[in-house]
Image (tube, rainbow, N blue to C red; front, side):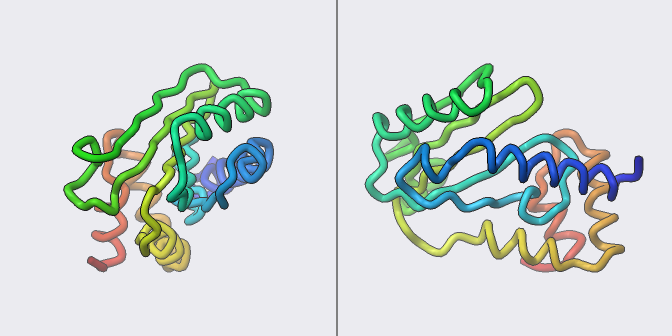
Length: 162
């Protein structure tokens, strides 16, 4: 199977998983698909979703995670409260709750942003999705050959932005 065919098959699996999870009913915020599931350049079973969730709290998110476990069999959960000095960057607007779920075959990243600001994640995925066929194949090759990759760096390098 070619890299492009594999990416398309993974994309179809990701869409089915996204539908099955029922994120719109599990959480009171609108889910936004990001990353390779949006761009269509998947090499791993990794689904990334973010929420603008300024009123999020631990109890609401954990309740939603229980609902997800009813939809798919979750093997592990890494839940992080990344507020205050635990946020991933110095920017106050990057406060979030972050959950990484694993099923037998999928890694599911859920980011609940506590500040509603413009985030580059969706625009970046669309920019990658709209790349030429040659650029898309180059990105897939690089992602496939670099297990500990920084996908954003690959996109910037191949597409020449940022």
